Every structure is written in C-alpha cells, then in structure tokens.
Image 1 (cartoon, helix red, strand yellow):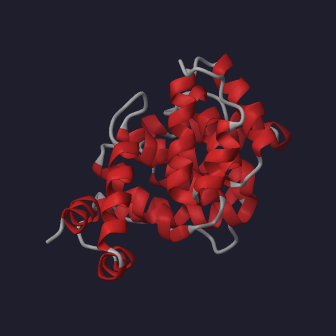
Image 2: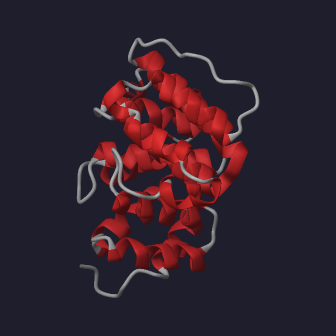
Length: 235
C-alpha cells in the first residue's frame, strides 16, 4: 500500500473512494496532497483536534455533510467531547441558519454513534428551539447549562449568546467565523472576524492555520480570502 493510501486508511479507518481514485489516476498527486494535508492538520499552534472541530463547523455552515462527517470522526478520535462539537455547530447555525443546523445534527448523531451512545430524537422541523431541546436531552447534566441558558434567553439575544465561552472559548468561536467566511469567499467579513479573534487573544499564526485548513476543504481561493487580512511578517 502506498504512503498516501496508508495515511488515509489510518485517518478514516478505510481508504475513501475519492482517495483510491486519485491514487489510480495520479498517485503522485495523491502523495503531494497527503503531504500537504498531513502538514496542515498536525498539531501546531492549534491542535489537530481543534482543526478537525473547526472543519466540522465550517462544513456544517456550508452544508457539506460528507466532509463534515469525515472531520467529526477525526475530532472524536482526537478526544473532542459532545459539548465541544455542539458549540461549534451552533456557531455554524449563526451563519447558515436552519440548513446548517439540519446538517450539523448529523455530525452530532455520528459522534454519538462513534462513542457508542444513543442518538436520541430530534423533530423533523430543525428550528433552533427544537434542536436546543434535543441537545439538552443528550448532554450530561453538568454540560447542559450553556445550551439551557440560550434557550431561556430572549430570542433576540441568541445570536450573541452562541459566541460566548462555554465548553469552547470565545476565541475559538471567532476563529470558526473566520474560517466560515473564508471558505464562503467573503474576505471582508473574514477580516472583521480576524479583528474580533485578535481581540480575544488569537495570534497571527493561529489565524494563518485557520486559513490553511480552509485551503484543504475549499481550495486555494479560500486561502486567498483569509490571507488578505493576515498581517505581514507572521507572528
């Protein structure tokens, strides 16, 4: 088995079809892609777990379930908790609304299955209030207050409350918004969220790592949009 095939078998537990086809048609391209992915996803200023969680949220926001599920597995394998996953998905909802929420619920069900836990039940109507009740039903008692506090608050405050610290820091949630706007090719908005992330303690290197994971999931144009707002000289 080639290094590329072995890498993806280790990451996903099996060689995905798209990897096998890349190997069949252009094994050299797979080797280059494998090296790039490995370098970007390894622990750096952001951990591999954090990068997978960011990619879960990014792909939920753009309703791309296939990639979201792959990274859900990576996040859970890396030690992510259900509360961490839920909070990333609620940020995705803030951007993508009901369609993002419908996609995101599948990540939660995947994660519960990977952990050998029951999936519970969510109503077919994926309005935020219904999904918040679903999340509370599957969370441990000590993990539920963050979601319960949103549910108890006036609806007009929900958007802001989704971004405050819970199991996930406000900084990481701002970084997720950077990634969501970068993959959406909305560079001006990504830049605004970079400023918010910096105010919450994000470094330029962390912002660059978010841009690089966006490159992996949405191509070089996503890096163009993220890089425009990075400061010169790194740091």
